[in-house]
Length: 101
Figure 1: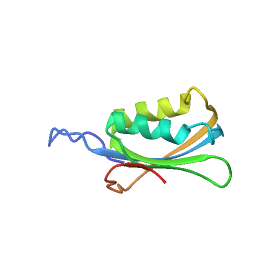
Figure 2 (figure 1 turned 90 degrees about the vertical axis):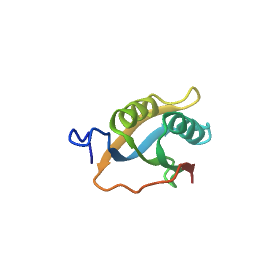
Figure 3 (figure 1 turned 180 degrees about the vertical axis):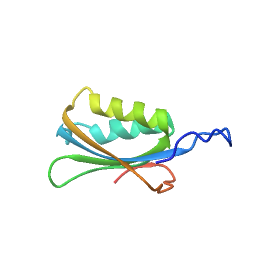
Figure 4 (figure 1 turned 45 degrees about the vertical axis):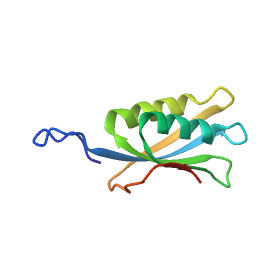
C-alpha cells in the first residue's frame, strides 16, 4: 500500500480487494459500483461470484478509495449489504479503467 510522498509532493495509489455480501446480485449493484468508481476516477473491476456475493478490486488515491469503499458498504437503493470484507493489497495492478466482469 502506498501513501502520500512528501518528498515528491504527490499522491500515490492504494489497491484494495473486497467481497460484498447481502442482496447484491440481480439488483444492479455492479452497475452502481462501476458508476461510483468511474465518478471518483477509480480503476479496477467488479464481478458476481458463484456464491452470490460481489467481488471487486479498486485502485486510486487513498482518500478517494476509502470514501468509495464506504459508499459501496452503504449499498445502492435496491441492494442490501449485510457484510463487506476488505483487504489492502501491497502491489498495484495498474488497471486501465473500471470494468464489470
